[in-house]
Every structure is written in C-alpha cells, then in structure tokens.
Image (cartoon, rainbow, N blue to C red; front, side, top):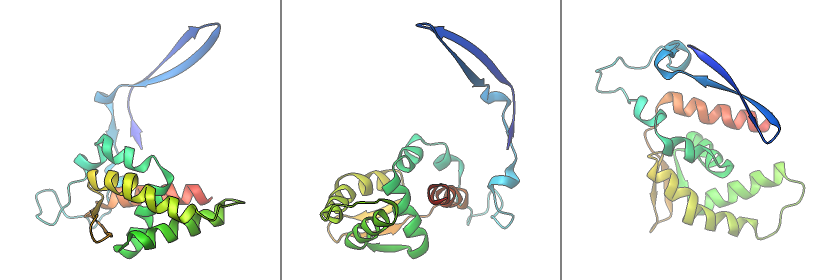
Length: 159
C-alpha cells in the first residue's frame, strides 16, 4: 500500500482524449509490513539480504516480464536447482496445461530459448546462477519480497 500525491492530467491527441496519472515519487510512503515478513533480519544484521537494490532495478522487472522466466523462477523456488533439460520439460508440460494445441517440437524450442535468452537474462539480473557448460541452474539468494512477487504473478496467471 502506498500513499502519496497523485496528479491526473488529460491529453487530447488526434481527436482522442487520454487521462493519465502522475505519481510524485518523493511523496510515496510504503507500508513496510506489507512487503517485509516479520521475521526478516533487522537492518545491519549480516544475515539480511538487501531488497532495495534488487526490487529497484530494471533488470529485475525485465526478468519478470516474460511468462517462461516467471515460471522458471517459480519452479526454482520449489526445487532450488535443476538442469536446463528439466526446465525445458517443465515449461513444455506447463504449456500443455494452459494451451489447447502445442506443437511436438515445443520442448526443443523451450530449451533453445532457455539457453540463449531466458537463463542468461535471469543470471544477469542476479536471480539465478547458470552454468552454461554443465547446464545446471540454481536459484540465487533472492529476498523474500521478490519471491512473494514471483508467486503472486504465477497465481494471477493461473487464476
């Protein structure tokens, strides 16, 4: 939940009227209880994983922008580590539960997109550790609010 100054403006272009909201960031006040579990280590505690840098980075949200990457993260939240082959199987299987028709070569397409696109991007964002030589993938140290965001995204997908 946030409170702050929201200013609305109306723009007319090419005969169409659009209304947009501008949120003034300097006035935002986040309710920390909504985002941080009560048992999270205190600021300054060496066991604390800093959430602000990850949640404020564009690479984090770019990583979550594609459904296969959200599904990879969700799967790794449950298993911690697996192989690229296993992830390709999971993505292809997941697709068969949500799509009416799935081409037979989708598993191979998932494997290629994992290796060449999704896993490098997730690794660059600091969300997974990916060894391209062995094909092993493991979940990086991800703060609890980021994990909760991934879980909510998947729940919204399947609702």
